[in-house]
Image (tube, one colour):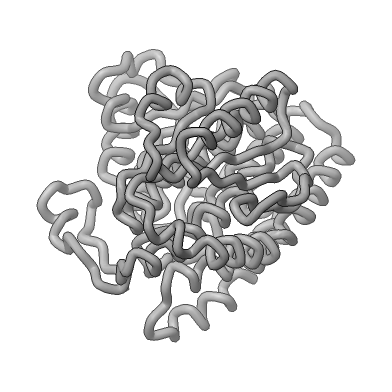
Length: 377
């Protein structure tokens, strides 16, 4: 069971972001072993055969939803509309919302997500599911069912384990629904589970390889004053999480760009001190070619260009991080997440940021972004 990992965690006096990163392989393995029990509980009574689902999330939660989006859509044939809850509830036509609404909040206390669900319910009848790490929190009281991501509370404010578990649980939600609606066979379901297990079994190796990469480039990364990440397809959610996580922890200007979007304006900001990280994955040949062309081009204007490669290509230099080959691009975010998290952790060290020194402790109380003031270590 998951709980035995967190008995130990609760007894730790000083857990860190790295503490939770290092738990990911074990915890995600347990999530797979418990499939599909918690999913079937959460799906009871839900209109899973809707042609569209609405997912409301913000912060790392929306990045996790974006990371799982294409896997879910591909295996179910269902379109996912992923929206920022505050903007959605204030400016969209709520009457057109899907009858199946999913609210994602790892803390279970996202004010905007809860209020958006309430706003839709005032307009029309819906079925709602909360996805959270803490059952019993406010969001679960406003939804019909709850999908527990099976991590327990992450005591560090800069979430890592919860992010990765949310990505996996959303993918597994899609897998289970695909089987329930007859989109796939039982045999296909088992094949997918085996592929997930194979990828999850590479998380510790990914952490180790990324750590070595960070240490080898410590001086270069430690001097970074501006950072950009570039990716395409399902990895866009991961590059968005890089923007979120680096901004939260390293606290230097950081942006995550979809490949084509970067080529329409942002490329003009490149300068000799700019650090750029490309995520290379499987994909359509024209997209992969465009990524390679941009990667080569940017090296003419900054020496600080890095590559995280999931295609099985051997690293050609110190700036290249060669990782486990993932043939199904839709599953690549499961290994992309620890890369971002480990880099964020080590860059805080190189930039002398002490994450145990909490800042802006009165923020939630002042702006009401959470239903309760957050208590982190």
